[in-house]
Image (cartoon, rainbow, N blue to C red; front, side, top):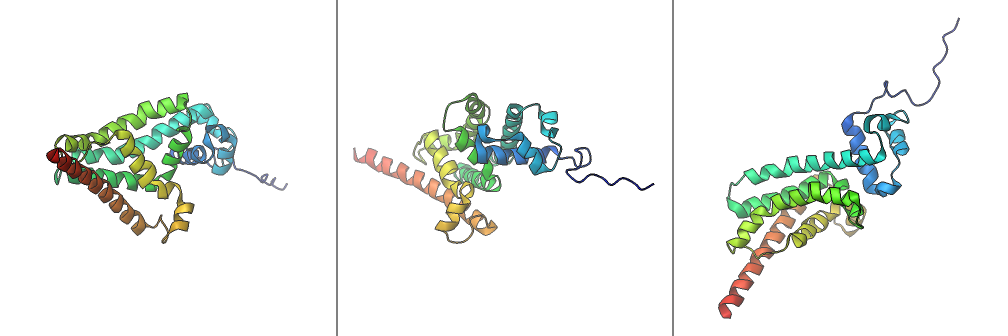
Length: 225
């Protein structure tokens, strides 16, 4: 008797398992590109090449997948950024420069994170509440603490956390979340390693130089008054 041929199609999930990180990486890309309402777990399963119910088996629902994805993505960001707070070499100004530079580099490697924040930040929702309260606000407070000390010492001008956040995150890191537009503006590929490093250096230097210049202006105005 001849052996029956295997039916063509997607292999069973147990024969082609997706790792936890692969699922969350795909989910981050999906939520960032399509938004929560436009995201499809079925489409994610197809993209991963697994059975149609694998993601539901592991996470339970699209909503739970979203929260798991956000926790994982921001956990990665925090793991790379927060150690800079313990490195005080060179003084607070140099430390702040390293923090800003690292922030840009991290988001160059994971541009989907800022795309997701942009999508969720358009309108109030329970998801935005969670995103802000559990991740954005604590991280922002930690990363701007050295800036607060510099402002208290008069080294830089005091600037609101909101202004700094949007200048650095949605300004400085924007070429990586909008690469097609960045390529058209040029020059070269914004995602090339040398271009990313140069851009991160310039963003950090410009932000700090601007804050120091504002502080000097304020000192002159106060002395003149």
